[in-house]
Image (cartoon, rainbow, N blue to C red; front, side, top):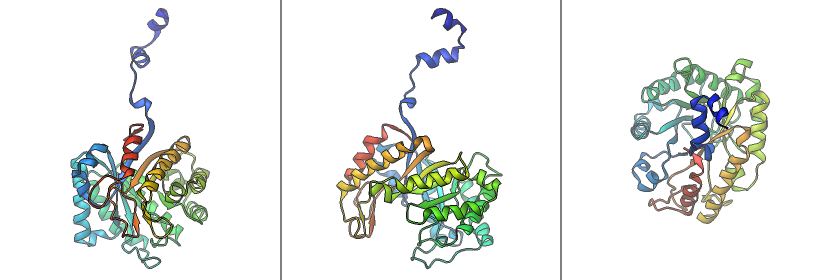
Length: 316
């Protein structure tokens, strides 16, 4: 053993004898999505020690002083507290099947202005379009346009910042997602398929219905076109309330959050790198949708405690 040690470089000897705490953790980074900057000042939020947040913004927010002010406040607060921000482009009208689909030229102009504004504030990760296959988004029938938007976003971000990240495609785990993705990839050139290195999944269905079907299928199709693509759960979580399908229950939501972590572990070797839990603060059970870790008054729910227990096993 002594002669073996003499032949080893010092760095390797140190690696043998010094344990690494990070190495004991599951190599998936956990962040959170929310739209309200007030969460950064809440003691429960600070105790969770997140380091990554996700914020979505309307594609034409550059024309709205209110939208810009809200985004500025969130991003400035996040950056001041040393958070990495994923900024995701989204619709300006969530009415089902009513939003107007912007042209590629409009996207380049309006989104380009947003990219320049928030790159200057330190944002290094952008999503081309949020949840493209859902009927609340104008891209839901236009996978080709979603592909065009990714190509433009890549051109806006990567040449001036090679280390920046672009979420090429961001999909909800619903029926028809496989067909949508196939059309998306077929519209991309071989070059841009190679450049589509991050795909986002909103897998509320799999997480809350205790299945793996759509997450597995989405990853399979992604790797059919680019085996190197990494997977981020860009929006996921335990549903406290969602319409009639999921009546109000913080106990069920906490249990489903365990499913979320389990699903990420299951597909870690298939490229899952990140989880962005949605959301921090829920509006309460009078709302149609609530997936908050804390309630409307800021009090911890069971899901918060579940996440705190799980976080010790993961990277931030």
